[in-house]
Length: 148
Length: 148
Length: 148
Length: 148
Image 1: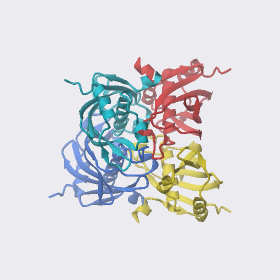
Image 2: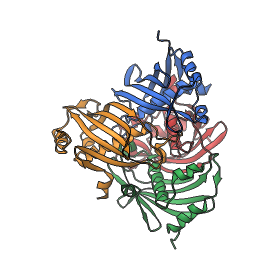
Image 3: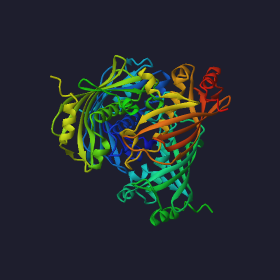
Image 4: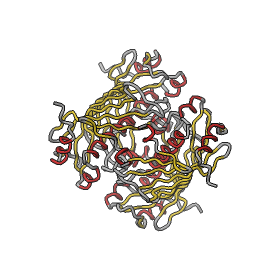
């Protein structure tokens, strides 16, 4: 149950995850180090997958893992120590071999960071492979593609 | 409220915080990178302080921050991707200028890492300063010292 | 002198920095964690600035620091433990308030990651400020703008 | 050659590695985040191993990797952005299954952090295994054991 709580929650067509900003996330400028937002977003993606039934460890047992292949990121405002931010993740597009997600990091209603993230499933050799039907079905069932 | 949830909870004489193991925490050995447990423990300390009313940002406004001065760490078992671990923090000793905490990272009932951590409050110049009465009182009120 | 060596070297219109891939950079997939390439690139930018005479600490004394405002990143191939990668940084464009850099991470002649990175100088309050003449002059003198 | 340079150098009975403090290493206190010193020290250990001929990747091919089992760390002084620190690593003790190293992080002649680090070679299952003769011989040949 607590596990559920720390994995965020599915929303209409996506996922939300609350995260705390700790010492480790900040740098000497007093704000969050830019690359840390990619960590926050990766946690959001991992928990979105988790809640729709896709586990990294099961994929790993087949020699597969998700890898980011492209990102466009706008860093608009910075978070600071003690802030609570919410990572919003939404499926934008899914093709045979890649998934495009729309992700935002918000502090209350303010968008701090917005990104378009393309991920692919890759083999141990680093080659992109087609998404297994189970993964596609999981996304479809999540209603994420039902933005119409 | 959600903020409360992600800050863990006070226990009899201490604090507990659940944390997920994400991609970022692991290394190519397949297990959690050793220094990441220090991050988990720092999050536990920060949230313990938060719940007893001590905020990093308020301290920072006075030019103060907590710094670790000594650690003894036993790395007994390793966590892996997707695991949920719980960070247990307990006050062991508090003197004028330093706090000694006992911290463990557990996966269910199994202790993965155990550490004794000494922290001090330091000025912007890096010098240890006496703990403000309010901080001492907050720890005392937390019942943390009531191990009798 | 050793300091010079670990800061990389200025090239015709840019900068090169060699970096080792360590345990900390990898994740359980066996490859480098995607956000770590942003660290490698930030080190490249910092050392480029250092070699043309711009220091973070001096800027910080005036309440200023560089912040990334936009990135477009292609993750093409992954690096692994023990690899040596080279970060190439080139000035693409400089306006009154922002700098656009072209950055690549290579393993020998193979481009692993390519990014276009926009940075701005921001005040302690997080507001973008005009680049000081000294910073503009430093970039100009680096020959980086001499792509003609 | 450059690879040699960025791997530090063997000293009489040990190893030295220079590292730069970057944005990523600092936190909002303005100093280096405590867990980052463990990264600096791990880089030192990896490069010490590298220069005496032991590669992580080769070990990994046999399902083996080094893991830290115990650390005692004194954080005496803090490093700041732009600092160059030197990691000193010395073999203290080697038994059938574990290696004890003495590590210090210095800024010029000032010891910032000192640690005693016990590492063990572990199998994919996480079990400690005896050090291969080749690894023992490499340490012996490094003169590290020549504290006589």
